[in-house]
Length: 127
Image (cartoon, rainbow, N blue to C red; front, side):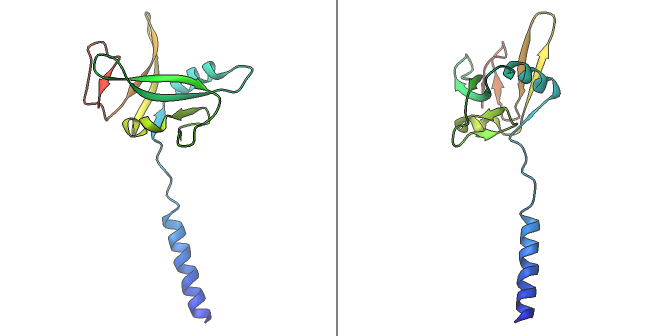
């Protein structure tokens, strides 16, 4: 009987170590994006930022950032303050969110490997 328990325990340990793989983030944030997001979130009341893909723009879809007070049931948590809308998750997998400033503008830029084409102005895309 003890040999059976020993074998069962070693099987459970192996299964546990296989399941201990770290989950890859759906979207990564660059240091400049993290800094800008912190600036936007700082305030007297706690806020989160939800990133979503909505149907709009000349190429069909566009990124939308919105403030929210709470996480929805199926939102994906990217960091403690950033969520991905559950309906947009598969369109965003593997993306990188960056914040870019130049002399004329400052904006969040998404490097998304799922994008097939984008419009001339770069504000909308097709997956």
